Image 1: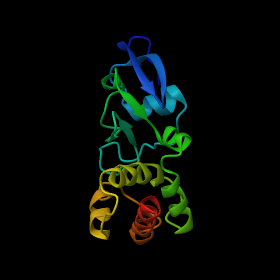
Image 2: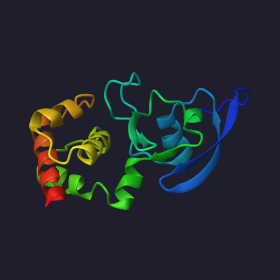
Image 3: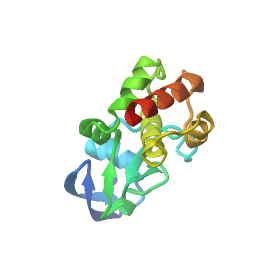
Length: 162
């Protein structure tokens, strides 16, 4: 993966609440750097074209596709992965609802779904089923189907509002 003649750059960012400095290859995408350089394997590499949503991470409070963003572009940013969101407890209601509603199976898409759903609920605490489907439309699931996932997001929204 590392090539000695590949150009690199020094970056400094906040990763899951911790300041970090690292030297990264100029052409390495963010999700690969997180997975291979930082050992944060919760976000996955799926399509590598920004279509499936498996690579979602949060950068400066917004969900982004980690396969389409270069690691060097995260210089100076606040990056949160599924591991960080789990550690802070901010997605706990969603995680519980996904478990209780059987909204996950293999788990490959789940981190991206959770981060995207959390972003939706942060801006819209009472989304309709149509709004949930629209918000998650950039996340692809092969196993579970979307009914259970929409049910889980709807259930988590109700818990968070209570």
